[in-house]
Image (tube, rainbow, N blue to C red; front, side, top):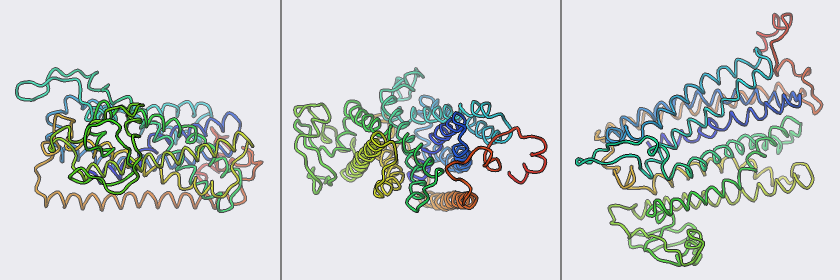
Length: 463
């Protein structure tokens, strides 16, 4: 399950955010009559469709795993928090239909009609994220039920089960995070092109729009990250203790950047900053921070699990801080000189920013899930009670099959993207100068419906 989720989550930023970025470029192209922007939007929509197809495979495997690997959790709690998965399924089917319409419409619909038909795409993506985050937030702060004498949930309140205390902080932190991740990844592709000397308008525009979106959202995400950490401090104090490797409940608690927690409560390595953890948690050195020893050993993460959650959290915060500096660098140059930064080091950092964001997405998931151990439903069900009783040999066989399938699927995805990129680059050699007009790119950019005389001889070849 960890391998499947870690693989699938790398596709999530593009499934949720790429439609919005594509439509933003599409709108710019229509509003300004910009053929290059329309060309970029059309190509990004092709990538969006390929990514969605890959997401179908990885998401389907996940849906089977919930039933096969976690029968204890789904059997007892499915009626309480299962609505989130239902919402995600509806969003998935709607998104599939809308992507098909959007791709079909490039040469067959009037420009603004095509744009407005594509506009619901980001909304369906956000609806899918709503369902999944609602389910995960419920696992972190379960609400909306009472337990009968045998420990089974009864009197389910759907509204309370969906809108749990952690839902708001988790949802907005997730949405902003995946949008800026997609922005940095897309911009990073064109940053590499700029570093290789491709300074045409196609690469400048392909870099500027998604990077601007990501740069604007980066400081917002930093604030949201601080907010969700404080929510964890209040709602899941033991998880907070794990992510900050706090052993004993106390005030004036120091902050450790990295470091390793041992079973006896000692910490080795890392950078110790006196009192900072209490200040960050409650804006005062006198803030009391709950330690891991506040609960029995069986009800808290082990020292190794706490160290893993702590490192994941610190990596996420470190990368986020560096991205804020990169966004400020970009904003300073844009506001002061109205142009892109000139330093080659800026574009080198921009090219790496996308990969760094994908790493933070992984680290965020690790922090959320590992920090909650040993609970799969916080303080209500342990992982050991939820997991399947299938023999270890069968699990290893299943794991091996999943690994092979995922390697083949993700390898195919990357191969398709590389071939698409190569074909587009060859098509653009000497074709997209700065003064390109819509008529110049009629063969590779929208729009239709096209005249009968043109479509009779050219449409089939264009497609």
